[in-house]
Length: 115
Length: 112
Image (cartoon, rainbow over all chains, first blue to last red; front, side, top):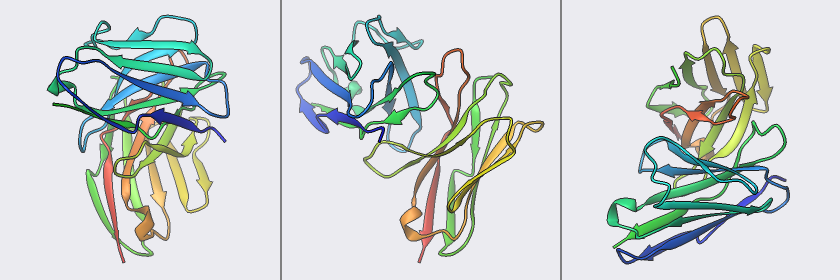
């Protein structure tokens, strides 16, 4: 149980384009979803927290207009990287939790490469 | 105060040996301490977690030891196997936000 999927697993795009990443909880209703960014050989950096039906809460230093997060249902959250640039290239990982929410289950991650 | 310090950065253990990874925290409001295992190119997978009212928790070959007064906790992997070779992250959170604060990670290599 507690399976989280992400799509796509990897994406290559041109600089200036927008990319959407989907995060789905497959066997539970996720009241809260989190989006992380991870650089090679580094730890996970929380970007934002989203609750179903509410606006996402962004961490300090994360541009909310660049990283648009939508949590439209209890099983789906999306991260859109707008006007992507090479410095946005990274490994993006979502996680989901339910109820009291302390346990987070992570998706497999999405590798984004911006050329 | 929000940091979780993790050591060592890397660890090499012989097959069958014990792998030990340590973490320390400052924020006494933390009330949930999970450990995650991550393989290259994959998302982290929850291994085991503990709350501060328990000093030790064991699940199979994985054990968390928790020292509340020292604000430290550690992961012990007994009978380490080559398949355990991965990066391990400790983390901490507290109920107000449930945001996980991750340690810097430990790259474990188990040699056959």
